[in-house]
Image (cartoon, rainbow, N blue to C red):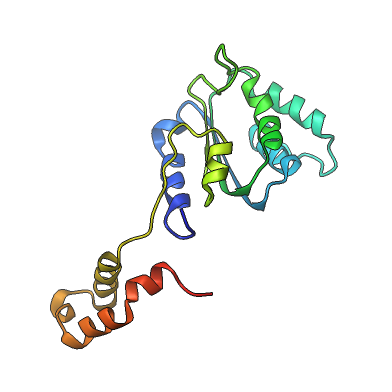
Amino acid sequence: GMGGVGKTTLAQQIYKDSEIGKSAIKIWIHVSDKFDLHKVTREILECVSKKKQKETSNFNMLQQDLEENMKSKRFLIVLDDVWDVTTDCWNKLLAPLRANHVNPSKEKVTGNSMVIVTTRKNTTAKLCGTVGSINLEGLKDDDIWSLFKAYAFGSDKHSNNPILQNLGEENSLGAKWANPSP
């Protein structure tokens, strides 16, 4: 879904769930527009090992260390705000995670471990091999207008004010908030 519709907030709710924290390592990585495989791998390893890794660490060594640190562990990894990732990068990132958590077809991580990816792009979601992606959409104009009135005025005493109703309808306030011009 587009920016601001709640992808990160939804992922945070899952991440903060107390049931998940009881038996799984939880890792949150903000990726943003450039998917840097080396950096993301290093950040995951730092979270798991609780040790700072050298910026210049060899990528293959990072992956070996990550595989060793993830052995037989359940995990929830959230990769937030992923824009573009190649199939090759995605497979390399998952390789050490799959090593000890694969099903017989060696395609998906198993053992109740999960990687959640938030992205604006359907192509990125498909490339990551989502198992039923959730596409969040913005609110409808009427819902945005109702929220605006509730927060702006705090009560219903102004909700039927003809001047405000006219302002909301003429300016399509909801549409402008949902799809702002640059």
